Length: 279
Image (cartoon, rainbow, N blue to C red; front, top):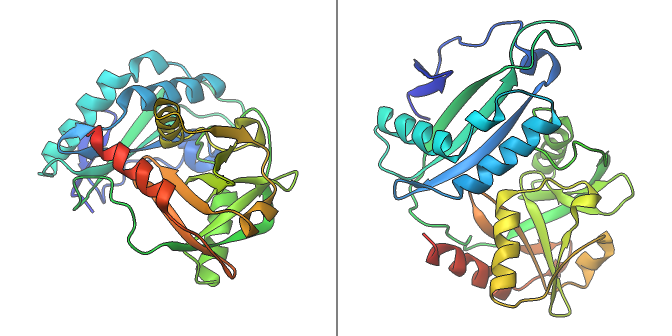
């Protein structure tokens, strides 16, 4: 890990005790977070990240979202990378929390923030050489509500899914929504190629509205590939030609296996190549 973090415009060592016991993200999960990637000294998709932060803060009724724009993201991540002597390739996590005290009813809607950074060795989005193995996690369904599309600090369903993943020696697990349809994975959005058609769970299915999901959908449109946002039955995993996952840090990762089913990676490879053309 890096040596320094950025907490409300001040640098601290990464082991400094900067959060108070009254912090609302700690006590109530009253916050959000955003994962971002820098390649060659350039923060990737800052406008899309800023748009998503703004939408999430508005949904959580937090003040100050206009200040956390793409300029803020580019400036603060660059400052933190320099402070840690990182040579331009890194992943960042921006955590935003509601300040002040109070019980469930907050005393204020102003926010504070914390940015962490970790250096990356790769300068591009590299498609995984070895395909990942997945299974469906059905112990806790993801609810569909007004907050389902946002990355909040209420992450227990994902934590429990990740524990299941570790216990069963899997690379990832796929979450179902409350109606039993495919939603996303523990850390990524989901895409399925079936009969030469690309499908991804619609936002109405409760998945996170990921930045890389947005980028992949834009690339599909640019290259005239049919891509449909849909309600996806998990049974399709037994018939699909390809399954791949996307997030802002890893880009595209292809799935090799689900049970005895094995997949190709032709479409995933195309998208990964297009991502790197834009760097």
